[in-house]
Length: 398
Image (cartoon, rainbow, N blue to C red; front, side, top):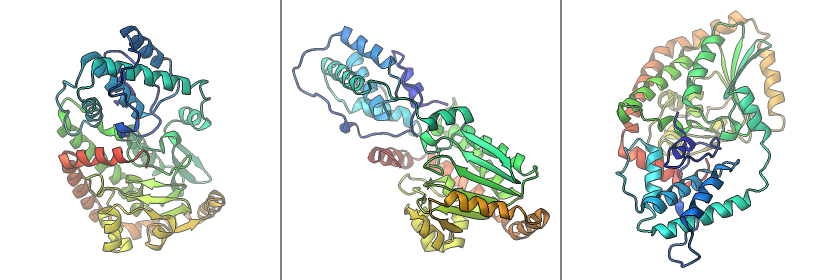
């Protein structure tokens, strides 16, 4: 998978920034100062080379805004104004790079070189001494992006990328499907999805859409649609009760799937956001069918079309959430209740669920196929690409 760090490492000079600290964000470049017309002490080519070497020594990720700025200034300093054709609409990373470089216009090479050296100097000074690694990040590396445990007849699937707000990568989609397949055959009574850290899940990691295959954007859109359809089908066909333990904010696919769960318990600090309209996208996870059934068509439209974010209490009032708990007692109360549910006769639990779910399963598969087909077309639209770039440029975080 192509990350922003790997893209920048592919420049004329290889830079090392470490792992991304959050899903890809396209920043507003004006947020960083530029010296557009000053006559300061000129930076030499040797100064530029030293600055590039200094960047290699950075241990802390400076963030995507800085990385894009450094890329643009380096290209301007070494090649002059942007001379590349505008990237394809689905190639979000290269489009962000192209926008950053093009935004410098006719800035002279000498001035770009000065800005690059000044920026590296100021950031290097601010980053010393290097900060120690966060425990969450250590745990993430040790445990993997997805942690699956089985205890007390409960199989728990945990999103484990706290430093990246538990954004779902392409590999995690595949791993979740494998975990669900295994859980469907083990001796557990319940299967639980939850998140590690502040977030339940922030939806798709946008790097999922940056590794354009040889077949171009069309092939990428097609393979993503197939993956999404298979992923949602796993939830539709899952034979045991599914429980979402929503420990914090939930975004995108992690919200739309909730209509396929049997119980949704939420902390009172959880929020539920499906920003499809602002991103030029359309609903997924069978939410175009389940949400209107749960909350009525107008409330569903507020979420799925217009991107209204719900608090936990609002989501509960509208039928998306089963019950809301105070965050201070959330984990204790929820897990005590779930352990009590596992004492029920397991075959009766499974049979009752099958009776409740079987009638609508064929309809859900049809809805899933329709939604994935619509999304495949949306991903290829100029409107979607432009909306994603605008959306991420306006916001530094979810």
